[in-house]
Length: 312
Image (tube, rainbow, N blue to C red; front, side, top):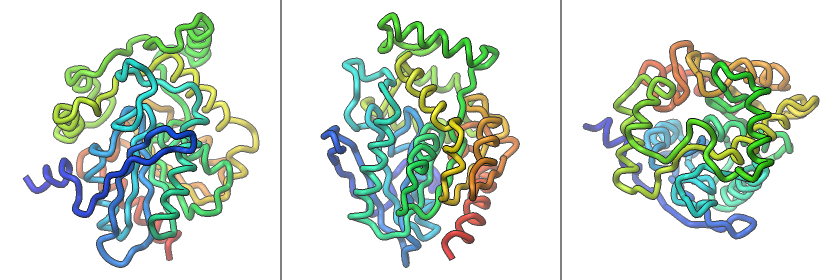
């Protein structure tokens, strides 16, 4: 029961706030102090369709390591302002908006929490962090990106075909329609995706329990517009010179059984960095933070080894 409480209850000392992004959009933020002498602040950056409540255990893990923690619901997710009248649709017109929101969050963190600052991100969040680091922020000491979205897996469908279908749909005015095989949130649909997400079915239920307690947290599948925006942003990462210009130390942790993002693209990206390191956890699935304890132990061992060198 103690483990369940750690996963599903906010660690002590949490402060929830609604802040206004640079364009006035409402963003929901949660912050926690360090438990003892602070090593700095970990800025925890979510993946697509995720929300603060899903990361309580990760917050506690970071606090155990001496960090204050700040995290945010992306616009269009969690309890931040949604982007369409149908709040179930995962939509964005451009990932530049996500990058701008992360910039704003970092500025907010600098004004409210102690440095140095560490970015810790999952999936789509890892992608946005890499985009952000491409602008050479001097205020970020290091970044850990877990299963980063450097490329999207379309299964047997070639990426070129997925791009053509997406561009055609958006060109025909369907940007706000669900992409193929996407739809509203349901617990049954999330459980059916377990093979893609985690081998720990108890931890999978944490997200479902949070959405049952507050249905406003739930988010469904992506729109054609979201997919086109993601592919355009992936092109930015692939541009010659982009990765090579990043000077911030970066640790990438990949899941060996990931079928959501492309590990091959992550390996290629990390090799281009000035200070990049990659660790693969062979038996893990996409949501490594929500994996079994033995898989999570690999993640945190890699995290601890990396941060010990960065935060001496």
